[in-house]
Image 1 (cartoon, rainbow, N blue to C red):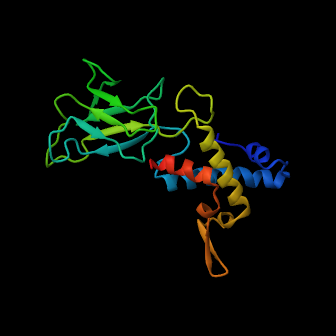
Image 2: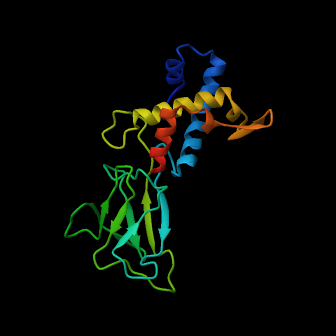
Image 3: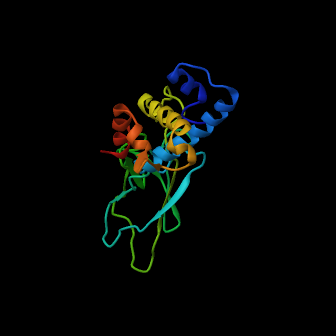
Length: 207
């Protein structure tokens, strides 16, 4: 699935697309999601189908209790069967949200657009001779519906996907480029996005 469908574009422009344009619109939605994710510095705009594993150095030159995930890993899922899995030196650690006296790792910022912090009592193990000793496997991105109980796609984000998809159908992005030169000037998708769309893109960027 995707965060929007060609029918959303039809509703936005107020007319029905012919079958050929419907197929193009569907492809443009996929382009729009990738383009927005790249512009916002996000790993994925739509919830990933499978967890992706990222590796870190534990203490990163010092014994630290906190490990922060990169900004591109937002929103991070930790609910139901979509749980954050953490290992240290090859050993799986128990993970919990918020306060816990038994978990090996506690999370803050999951299921939101906040940057995620992983805290470990006593600090993360680190040694100069051991790199990438901590692994974090998780899914990132929004749910495909606006009514989901966890990480629903915000209505303004869905609207931005529709807007960029429509621009890609009718403008420079249809060639697969972020911008093209016309009459000696550069025309960019960003230049054509509405003020509301730009505000949404800034929010996704964390600005």
